[in-house]
Length: 216
Image (tube, rainbow, N blue to C red; front, side, top):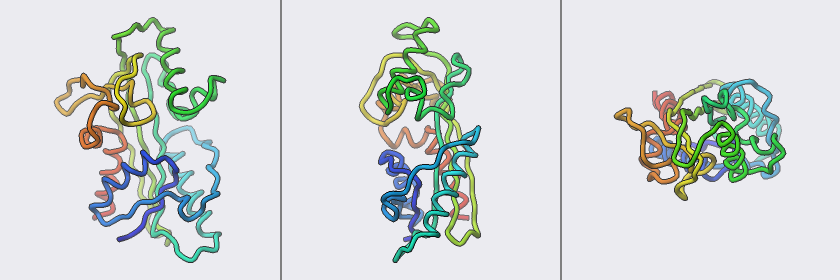
């Protein structure tokens, strides 16, 4: 199997990469399996595609300058987030740092709390939902530098202010995806089985786009 180093330490993202790419012959692991102390670059680009490419390029450069006995065959990085219409598409590219930027803590739970706080400020009440979409950009580069691929995908849906479900991560407990029949799910991403989530999610769609490129 070929080995792909993903520029993240997020175990949930790694699991999604692995579940979709393993059938194509890719073993997926974190970049930290090769470079345990590698820092995360500052995300300075204005969009998801730019930040995914930035993170991928940073990881490739770090691998090339390290003295390692073995190297992965390729590197991939993703940048993803949630855009809520009523919040002028916030948190957007700042999704992972939403609460931190507001001085309200850090991490998934704090980010969800900050989102709920802002939605309540717009007048939302328990049981209400409002239009939103997840976006995911993935950038892939092999270590030879011969192949680059980018994929960008979206998942439309709605967000509420009451968390539901224990699966998933990030904003999943607040997000109700649009289903394949174009109706809105009555379950959040955190309540849906992983197979269903992969079929609908922004990251699942982007990974399948990448998989198509890799298998061509």
